[in-house]
Image (cartoon, rainbow, N blue to C red):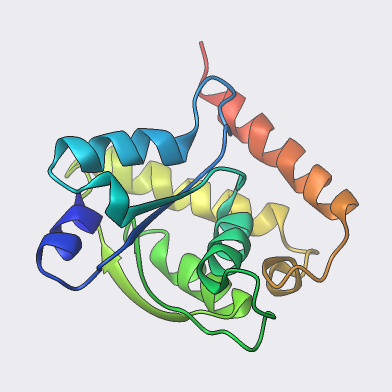
Length: 164
């Protein structure tokens, strides 16, 4: 919804929906695209990146998509990163590591204190899990596929923690 507001204000002529099938039964990018279309954004103004499974790969693959085959480093797309306010600091860092020029825009979050605490704990947990990982190098695509598989396993494990 926040990205749609930016689009309608003329601040984001293209919306990039990024997110793969982290939860295995849907693609995050498709869900976001469907919502944006329902809110009045023409499908032609939406790009989808359907491979990412965490913020590191959201950044890496979004920059690659926006650069359209140009050499990383030779292209620095300007983006407005939309995410939860609890996630923006780390997200901004990773998109900048990936090569983007980044502004941020926090989306609305539920007012319940439990939500804030839960999301803050989640971000804290992610930082602990990545303590020995060079996230910037991964966002730039400088690490091999084995690192990606390890992190994908961590992400899928976190995804399943909320399942009944």
